[in-house]
Length: 109
Image 1 (spheres, rainbow, N blue to C red):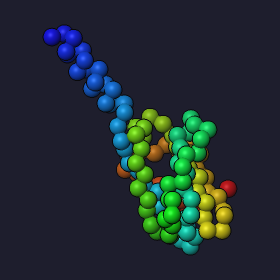
Image 2: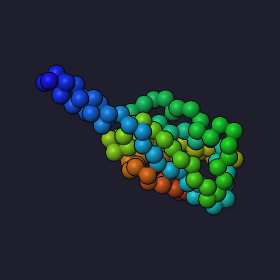
Image 3: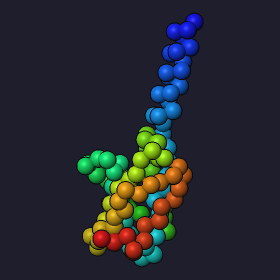
């Protein structure tokens, strides 16, 4: 019985650290379309894959980002490239669950 309780507790602790969470990116530039969006854990050197693929994020539109890393325990690097090739960056940004992060002209490199 003690072993069963221990197994249940360990499974519960593991599930608490590995779960899907969501946040949102909004194109807040007002005029420029986003063609590429890369989001990665700040601890990683890999920017990850382009999240837009064949899509375009137009001004005012929002992209849902799903992750398996708990948002409260890490920070994120976000790189966005617009239709003119301009690069917007947010480095080591703390993001809460279900938060909407608006990318604006002030985020231009």
